[in-house]
Length: 304
Image 1 (cartoon, rainbow, N blue to C red):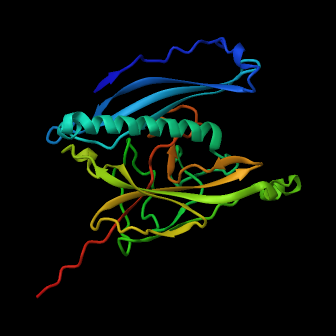
Image 2 (image 1 turned 90 degrees about the horizontal axis):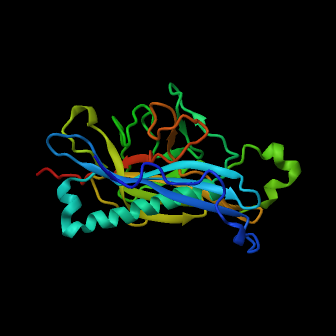
Image 3 (image 1 turned 120 degrees about the vertical axis):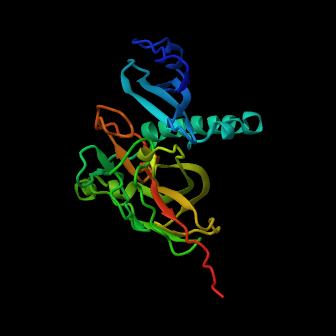
């Protein structure tokens, strides 16, 4: 494994000199420090692969008194690639993936601190203590497994239900606020407006480590399809590749009291010593990229 940058970003314990900003109609300051950037190898002896990863720490301060509103780690990583793939085209792949990983980090930070609507409770899945499923469970294609059975920066033993066509219909539960009854008297229902659903589909890439322990490990790779929808159902408009594996995720996005909000990206979120995202604080559930998988059908072969 190769890594760069300091082990920890040098954030001062006390508020830096942000006094000049107080008269500029600014109420908070976000500090972001890159902790590590590196390649994390699978350790395979036959076809070794590695993920490009980046970790960051983000601290949100209230400008008026320096109160720390949030101080948390974030991580993003690419799909696994061989050394030949990383160096292809004078390392053009490496440079492109680095930008995508940093963009992923930035999206995570913005989503977690400013967009995610946390009134909806996530549910702990059966037989797991550290793995939780985000709101809006997938309806079709119905998952055929417990998404938290195996977890190691990807997927062990994950199954991909097959859809009927290369332009499948995807559907999930509609957004509903479980606190509606409690908040009805406050009028919160009337101020949730502009309801939309964001859909993303990624290609799936499998680890090629040559080690039996990593057989079946997959990760999202390239984002190949995205849509903003008015309903929690959609038929893919552009044909996907046949005989291929994909991951999908989605979220509800809306305005609450005139401010943009969203649910988490659909999938599973882990915490604890066996988690994909290592944290000892169960309330901090960061995106683990454990999205829902599916595979497209193969062309039928006619027999003469």
